[in-house]
Image (cartoon, one colour):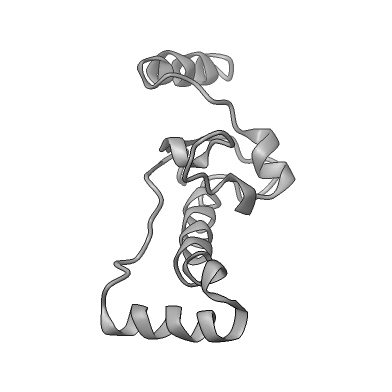
Length: 113
């Protein structure tokens, strides 16, 4: 059983490999250049984050912490990926200073003891 998970960063793939460039070019041709990077790199990265976070809470009876360490998940970051999170995901998250994570996680688990 997994009770805690930490996602550090947005797990973007390296965009300069031949394969990555081909995928991005295909998206650019189909959907426009301005959407190509998000479709070829950002959305797959969000899916990876969701998959990782989902390993903690698998049913309504599961309890755990899911921590994301990266400002890009916040709405006001200039390279934000927040718009790709569902409304439920956006509502679940609490933005906090990284120096407070230990005490917040400790308080969370102490409330279940």
